[in-house]
Picture: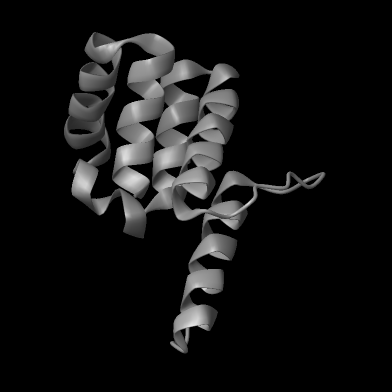
Length: 103
């Protein structure tokens, strides 16, 4: 879901060409692939800021909103909440509902 949210959001906001270029940028300059994004949300959001400047936070919020929508969970934005915190909160929610522990 996370990978689909990233691809879909960037392509929807900025076009397929920009989405493809960003994914190539992740691999070339940040050393991880699209499939690794769910395990590296902090690095993804840093890459968004580095690539899109101030707009990177906005793109990140759209990604998180889409992720929550795909998960069937209402997204509630909190003052001072970081994008990584929102992703981790969603992971915990799924782990709690399945009875797994989140490290």
